[in-house]
Image (cartoon, rainbow, N blue to C red; front, side, top):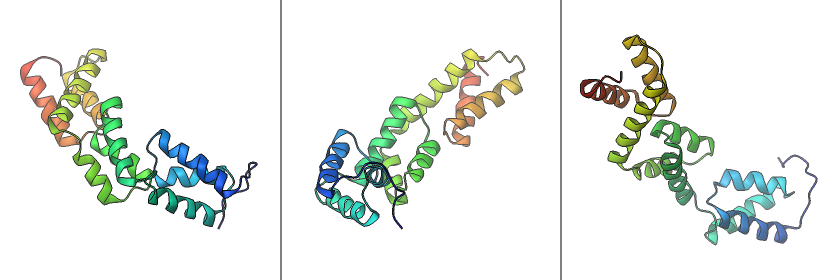
Length: 165
């Protein structure tokens, strides 16, 4: 099976040089690079050879990508572990590397981001019914990828210390 026909056709060496720059700019998954090589007109066998060469020359490293993705999504976007894991699975990162990447997230910082996320959302809610308010906060935090039991613990801690929920 080959990539669908594309308008641009380059020779393999030119595409490889372009791929090196693409990988040097930021960490990439093999799936992203494979897709980009296809867009640039390489056949699947040529793309696989280019990927093998990129890995060999350390331009492409799935572990490095997974860690950069996990820490970036956590630090920049405030995503929880579940959402980060789903994102890495969509990039077809192996489970062992996903686990390793998630271990890079500091537990205390993770808890603090969750508390900050819930407090920020609580200030925006107009719901007066405490049960509905708590449910909305819980659903919001879980939609951001945080674990349900941890969300419940944080909501309990916050409600004991203040009247946010």
